[in-house]
Length: 247
Image (tube, rainbow, N blue to C red):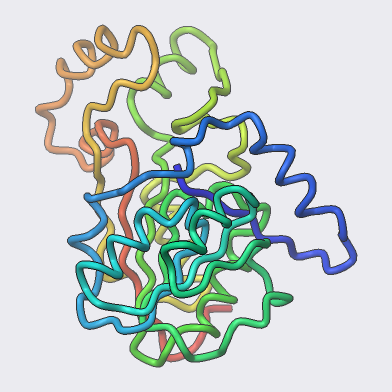
């Protein structure tokens, strides 16, 4: 999964180094996600794009080639940022914070593909993104769903909350979200959520998921949104600026 952190403490000179250590053991494909399911949400008229947590630049390169847009990336992993610099218009190695001095009101679209959950303060990241967006700019984001059925089953029935190398319980995740808390996060940061839908249904991430999904199908027919959401690995979000931030 593509990833990034924001660091809200300007005095923390070692924050980037800590991130390098956190990702040192990740496999290379962790930073090389194409994310084709997010392309249909991309506002095709966008000319200038910022991909936060761009990884090695695979998703940004696709945007560049398919839509002909100028793509910038921010990535805290130095090896991945180096790869991204070969394909994107500009790739910045660092944390997503105000010290990057990115241009205000510049980007037509800012992407957070499985990134906000890695951040200590995702609300701060969205508030910063709001300043960088053009007046009619959009955020597109993918965020893991902590209410996925296998996660809930293992917690409620087996009493297990085991972190993994990737997926919803990735050991580098700091924040966890449901459909409702995602909407609240964006609204508090000054955005109007235009789309919010589950993606990547019935994903097999851990041993035993096949059996757990069979159990889920016993209740899957019920016309309840929260039950339908349980089949989704992530939520996809499209959001635009509100007239002013929520307080």
